[in-house]
Length: 306
Image: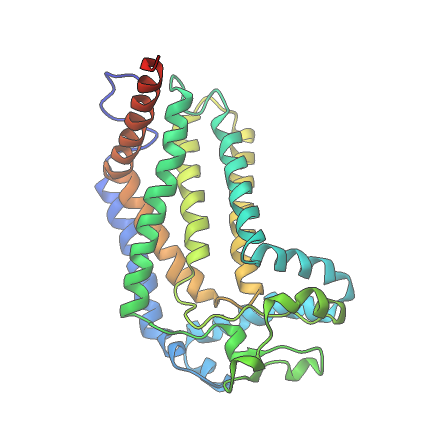
């Protein structure tokens, strides 16, 4: 990293207008949900979903992402793929590996972060993880505590079965045992049952927030540092990044762990705030510089050892 560069344009460009737009749009999303969807925090029965626009959207999205898996034999493999992505250990490992591989592929381009060292690129990756996770966890904590402390996920509210498609959505407000568990999907998928992941605090969509924070940071870096890239290659990079971000987010909807509004009004709003503050104020650049300094200091100390 050049020592005489005060600002790194790929990481920080002052733009108060865009900062206000991003944060305002995030607040509009959250505000619309508070006015037209927060009833979902307390509902227990199917008819409660008809109260507001957000509730109706949630129900339509849930049925859309599940009905085709429940009614086609050929989609059993797809159901297994989704449950693998959603598994507690394997799914997290797969997601992290995919994101790291894509980030490495993007950063390996000679047009991304030109004139910067490998240690600087590693610092950027670590900054995305540290700053992104810290911001997302803070906003999720505040949102969950003050907006919707215990929102039941679709898997808690509804139980899906292959018996009579028209009656698949039935109330399961009794005990936890009434709902499927994700561990049974591989067995149930043979009968075209989509087994759900149970969550009693589905708001906000933390996985969706994490995925989109990474994607928006990556897209911003590509746009700002890869002007020498052809339009086709830049489009290809954006497509790969957002394809996997959306895939991993949709998997949470398919598993019944989140409502669509959890991901959009909750997760997307967090993304807009975290990324806007990061790239339109010096915070993300400052985080990267600290990490870069620590890495270089560690390398210097190692060289001084006998």
